[in-house]
Image (cartoon, rainbow, N blue to C red; front, side, top):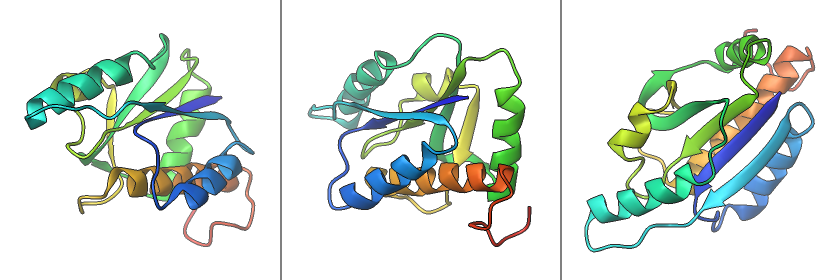
Length: 154
């Protein structure tokens, strides 16, 4: 199955671990990470609108869209793995996981996503959210292959 992580901006201080876990996730999925430009503007609304345009330009048709957002639904690692397994057997060509910038994702973009996923109730910097998501995609693959990386409930 194809998984595309669409993130606003490049990872800063966390670039090395982000790239490492994205490389690991690619062991299990046809994985790619694409970066949309960070928006500029005088207000949060302007920034969100510009970032939304950049994100939408990266989205492919026939992919499920998942907004990664504090307001999304919480999921355990095993639940995420099982959900990805179900999606892999469906009609979609893949999944886009969408990680916003400093202000998150615009409301219209969140509304256009089929699912919203929360990584934490905490507000996370977007590069940290990208790292956590990449690690969870790697973990989900290990769970589905019954490999020993994941020590929690399956």
